[in-house]
Image (cartoon, rainbow, N blue to C red):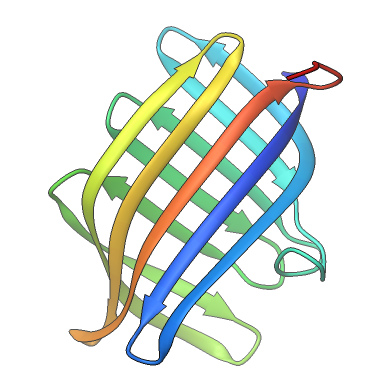
Length: 142
């Protein structure tokens, strides 16, 4: 694992409108045999305090896991709907993740991971989402 700078942009579209969140954080990154792993700590400013996010990408498949007080695990796979349990301090619920597109441009030196998906709970639409994660070795000038 090497230290990296992460630029993460998330766009969420609901019936009420669109919300775009962009944040910068530091994390760790590894690449081996076509499998790319990213991890970072969340805090109140970017998500859930005291949670760790781990992202593994292999080809067009992405697995995202959050551990800590708010736990979750999502499978992101182009043209496939997966169901996941999302844990909150108030209780757990099951949600559907339907992925429309994945672009994995990660290399051993970092790069970009982007995916677009929708979320439903009990088959009721919640949101359309896009996430982009840009990874670069810490201290690298862009």
